[in-house]
Amino acid sequence: MPKKSLLTKEVINRYNAMADKYFKEIPQKEFLLRKPFSTYQNPPFVLVRLDLLFKTLGICPGITVLDFGAGSCWLSSFLNKIGCKTIAVDVSSTALEIGMRLFELDKTHDLDLNPRFLTYDGYTFPIEDRSVDAIISFDAFHHVPNPETILSEIFRVLKDKGKVGFCEPRKGHSRSQDAIEEMEMYHVFEGEVIYKNMKKTALKIGFDRIRAINPLAMIASRYRWGFFPKVLDSYWPFHRLMAYLFKIIILEKGYRISPRSTWPSRLISDIQTERKRIEIGPNELFEIRGRVKNKGDTVWAAQTPDGLGKVQVGVHLKGEQCIQDYARADLESDITPGERCSFSIALKSPRKPGEYELEIDMVNEGICWFKDRKGRTAVISMRVS
Image (cartoon, rainbow, N blue to C red; front, side, top):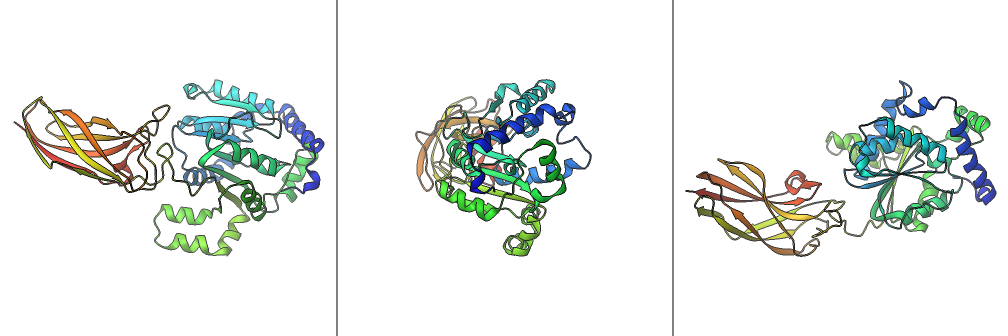
């Protein structure tokens, strides 16, 4: 991070102007449109780092992600294609124009997600408070001459339980030959992102959890190598080794606040039904009653503005006739961790006689069935005759 003596408005404005000039004067615009596949060496390294960031931040369809320092918006393109609502933010309007062209040229983008491209003045984002689920800064934050101001803005627009992921170059990047050439040719800012400095600043701003991710530990965890991930994550020399390659730093806002089902953590339910067996005729109306307990750490939302993350009781029908989504019932109110609630589901029996099973599960609308997160279900056997 730069020294405070650099944090003058005149210097910041000059660097912002240089950033836009860089994108205006770069000779091969097609090179930017092909990122990160502009060179054959680059994609593997970029994709490995993206995998680590996406897993750590919990990137999933439906959430709103701010792509900070978006440049030509290749990362926003990735996020759009997996179903995220994107906000590309950069000081360079020229860069964002290239990004908009990228979205126009590639017809596989989902424009119904309303991708946004916003220029900011180097100080303040034109974004509402607490409106973003996650923020990614990919090889961008070391170009910021006023990091404390930008971290404050990141904190402001991030929702509670939101996360920010920084992927930055290795230690000593600002003194590397590539960085020196960039500064000499384009007069852009090249700084260093130092973990202990960022941690001190982030805690002062209000972030309550700061982590440096060890990529080796994450890869080992993914392949379930027993206790090996904990060894890698706790053994400091491995962190130092990774710091010489690249840095992944995660900041979390409201870490101690219970997450909500709109962006869930652990979804675990305990479902109890009044009946375990039903005898009924074909095509008859009947009712299932029971109680469910929230045994996870996530608040179940009974209603959400767009329906995404709304939790309901659902039923699967198995047997002579199989229907994956047989019926659903709303919750009367939000259910906090440890709380119980009653439910009632109105159903109609199948027309075809036979032996059936009714599997009762919870569903997080647009995200998952709890069973998919290794949750337990309740089963009622049913004979239709």
